[in-house]
Length: 207
Image 1: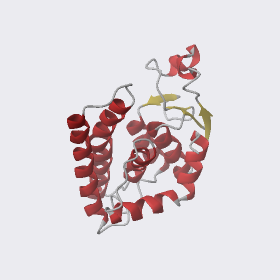
Image 2: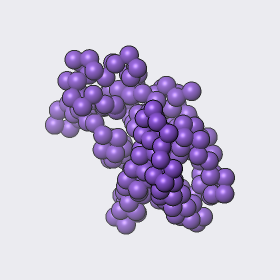
Image 3: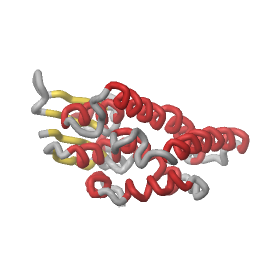
Image 4: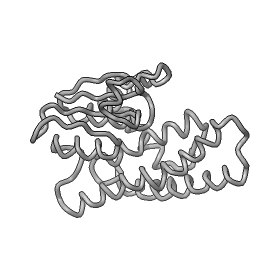
């Protein structure tokens, strides 16, 4: 059994969705970030950084395993379940490349833009425009990839789960929409329709 401690943030959604899609037995524990659940002694013992998500796999080979960082959780759950990550070396490498693309090339400028807009000040336009340009460049390349593939790395994988929450928060939190990226929009609708994505999002607390 895997315990997942999460909330309705981008990283929290990734952990909840990957477990729902994996089919592995797990229990979801919602962490109320506004109340400071992540700063309690019990939580800090699992993750001294006071951040979600955290998983605790009590049935891990070699003994109980506590794991933080959403990218590590995505890969661990995929490998443990034997799903969501190709076994063929080239396909696996492409899937991991797409995960890295979502978690670095896209998430970094998104996070910068998010912090600018939620820092209590009007963000300098030239900096915001720079982040917006980086985001559009990455999403444009992803849209091109989706022109020839239903999912980011061939079959549905953790690459899709890595990208989905960031795109959702770009639209819902930062009010950035990209209707011109038709392939990306088709992919987003297909993601939203997946039962595992819906279940994981609901359990993490996303409306």
